[in-house]
Length: 279
Image (cartoon, rainbow, N blue to C red; front, side, top):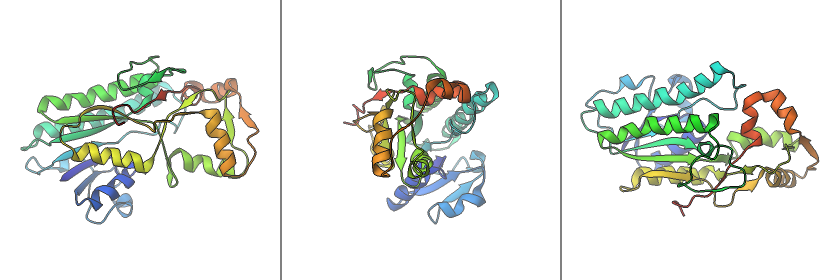
């Protein structure tokens, strides 16, 4: 298959591109910095700076949409939230437009989302059939992202929406940021630690994305999480055990709210998500 990928040079995208290349697929990766990211991707990858670089007669079989600015990269001011939204919606709309204009309609689109779709849900057990428990910014962001992707089905494209939990892997993502702090003994519990953390290993997420791409008839919403969510308290203690450091530190919730503003909801809230459809 010939696959167009947005966000292909990121933490998840790089691992996915390696796996797709091993499966014999041809890759077309959209990047704002094609020359700078070329060395991160498999040989033979075609890098483009705009989806308009793809001709109408280019035989594209699938679309994978992983693009979006990092939610943790800055305080959630009004302009910042607008950029977070636009970074997801603009690219998604552009992919839907690409599917419409191609002479041969792609068979499938895999579009990213997140368990933030469910909002800060407390202890509620959440499946793909659950509605949002709190319509906070995380919900609004994911809902708008998913709704933008749904437009592609009007062109007859099979659509999979992947609601991803916290992705863990040794070479990037949250674990790469936390590991040095825990090794230094300054890893901390956040708030009272009772908030749920739904996680998934990078290898499992890549396997889910590849299966969704390659398997006809697979469509709809999937929770991409491990079937055993943990509390932040448990995660903190486990990280301390693995690094052989004490688990004594904590950051009070008021201090996080003071320092991070609305963005603190990402750290103090959570979702207890189960991947029932994948199971």
